[in-house]
Amino acid sequence: MKTLPVAAGRGAVACAATPVPRRSLLLSTAAAGAALQSEQVPLRLTRNVAGAAAKIRASADAAQAATFASTDEAFSWAKKDNRRLLHVVYRVGDLDKTIKFYAECLGMKLLRKRDILEEKYTNAFLGYGPEESHFVIELTYNYGVDRYDIGAGFGHFGIRVEDMAKTVEIIRAKGGKVTREPGPVKGGKTIIAFMEDPDGYKFEIIERPGTPEPLCQVMLRVSDLDRAISFYEKACGMQLLRKRDNPEYKYTVAMMGYGPEDKNAVLELTYNYGVTEYAKGNAYAQVFVGNIDFAKELE
Image 1: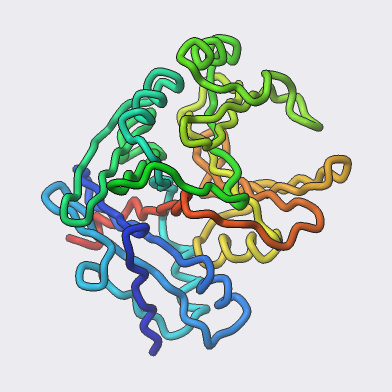
Image 2: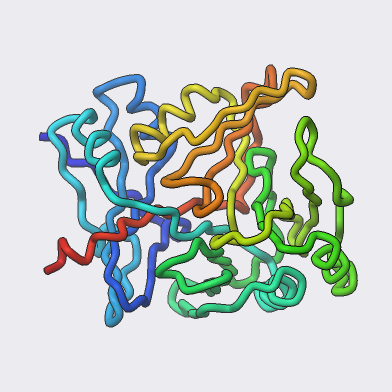
């Protein structure tokens, strides 16, 4: 019987003061990716419980280790587990400045903020609706650190808007940096634009009215697309929603998630022809996945 060890560390904080208990799952892509190649490599999972009266950090003494008879059993469990993307975590150099920028330029709301004095960091959660039902951003400010290296592996976040022209006008009026003017996406008809936040994170603005999930995607660059798709399918239980090859521009994208793109947040995996490695930097942290039925397990 294999015991799958717990991943810990400041980057793996998984706290949620929400009315509905839930489990969040953080997978180590390095270990789980290796597990796809060898049965001898353990899959690293973090399973944390958080309720209205409890805030549990992802640490060795506060998490539950998941136990499976084999890696195949762990993958099977992942596919059957009822999940959705909970939040994306990344680090910023000036928390108050970033919160103000997201609120004024992108229309997000500050959902909650907590200061962890003993660990010397502060978290802020922002989004377009309650954490119980929406994908949200978790900003992390580490005391005294005013800048980070974003690296080349992280691509951008996607935000759907009703009116592209009005959104871009507001971004400019509030001092935002528009790096791509509104226009059709390469090889398609969807109107998009790009902007950067104060820390240099890129946001793709997508004109798509009537969406229930405005914070709609996280784009990551990968060096082996088929292997990455296999990892997210097996280890995370995601579905390959669509795959599109763009030979003219020498890249391929794959959309992964737990439901249709028009209703759910998704991961956009991008493979650029011939690129086998990306500098990961130290700014982007991880995406958390949650089991929306975990309350039943606590009864």
